[in-house]
Image (cartoon, rainbow, N blue to C red; front, side, top):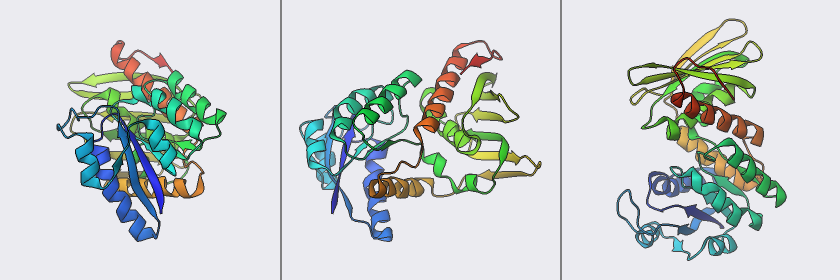
Length: 281
């Protein structure tokens, strides 16, 4: 049985509460032998629900560790969480990646592009396999068409800063890298981010508090498809993470993750600029 180590800002949060059960289900279905065995949270008591790290560990049958280093020493593979606090990821990466153990880092990968580059540089220095993604990249609805040249993705969240990553991941999966500029237009609490590429590709991200996740894509032949996203993208993500632990080969390239970060950073900057003003990425 291979041991997974959790690193988090605080342990009782949505992702950490869901991942153990989901991973156990995938291991059972796929015949894999992984167990979330060790965990460390920087803050002992969760500001979300008041549950302590010790309580979380007892509930999940996990050994609480006193330091990040203890988790890394005891674990076979590492999962860095703190999904709502990407500003902590560089600090955690500096502690974790020198151990050279296969590491998944939850979204959002970093608070900005320069920090993302620094994290990947550390991973490269220590030859540590590393990847990050949003679960929405693993929506099966995105796989129905090849050769997409135009894409609109939509979705919801409490803030652009934290949740635009889901739309950016979907966009980069289908259109790849190369976005040059971004602008935003507003309609009440709806925000429409338009992206320009150097070639004929084009994209829009529609973001609002209650939009369903959906996409509309068109290929070079003019054929279009629309779909609400209803597939089990979190289950697919768990398969991807565990498959990464098995192979050590990242499913998402650093180039694409940096493109996602470039788009996320551009979206945040666009929100602070004048509506309709093009921002270089």
